[in-house]
Length: 159
Image (cartoon, rainbow, N blue to C red):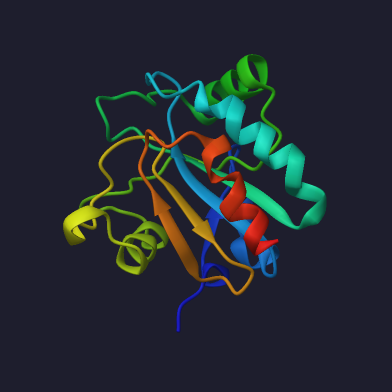
């Protein structure tokens, strides 16, 4: 059975990162964007990461430009934006597609593991969140409008 550990993607800047390095951790996977009305959620994601990282929790951000072109920047621009505006210290990866023929296999697996409402697998917008348990399997999918702080209780249960 496929788990989060089966995937590898480049971080911003291009360094390869095996998601197997997060095996045994509780992981929140989020497709992010710098020019979205939900972009302030970066602050809440960073708060969650800082609050729980010492207990085996990590946020993984995956920039995506498929929703109204709201993540057009280069890796360097995305990294600078995240650091300067939100003090992001959790891992952020190079931009990927989450829907369509070019969707990254990670997102194909996430969507298949936790379909959205009415069984739709498509990611509807930026900041869709997937909570992955210590076993590397998807536990829950959250709509883009769910604030990171509202996921804290579910994270606590898995830690």
